[in-house]
Length: 274
Image 1 (cartoon, rainbow, N blue to C red):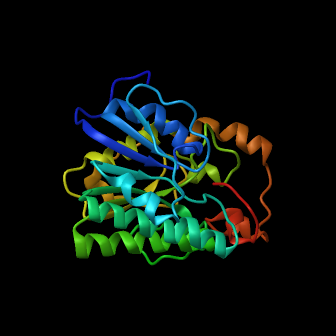
Image 2: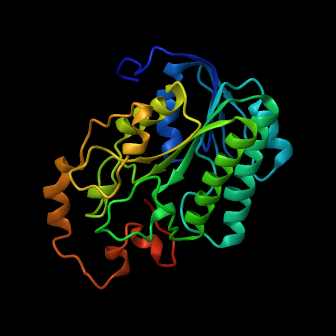
């Protein structure tokens, strides 16, 4: 990592699930600055272990494989599962059963904090002319969004019954730069992603907190006021890319559901990203 760690707090062992995915690969290179041991899990190839890394492949729906992942772990960054829309049976296995197994492992091994990669698609059927708070009712836009709504409810249950704290990150569109005009509102830079995850790991008391993962964009659909106790302060903005994005996409079709709703293409059946 090219800069100093964002927090002086250091963990003995962190676990990242979904470590071979797009955001997992990005955080793999950043989170080692915050722990002595970084445990990485996925079903995809994780490559070679760097110093301080532990590679532990596991399918999330395989409870016998998942439960040991949580042994000796201080906190979890749970990115694992399917990250786009699929048929319900696939979502059920990876995202619903898999997240339950993860929380059971956390409970059994005394892990006190989970950073759960939820999604903006929990509220994707909100219209783009609305501003939504994490306290507003959910409006999932897809099987994927439904699975993340389940994960947030599971997090609340495990906090209420077992005292496992969670910060549910309703991640917007985390890419090197916004790809279209929708992402001018939903974009989350990689540096701000790191700031958000570190805030979620290090805030003193979180219970179950829901926060939208977005940069400091001029166009904003989400109001994170209820999550200010996390201390997350984004520093990047999609505004730097506005001219190029608008040049590529000068016209919006107001009859297209993807242009009306915050979830974009997820409100229609098909594989989409972001």
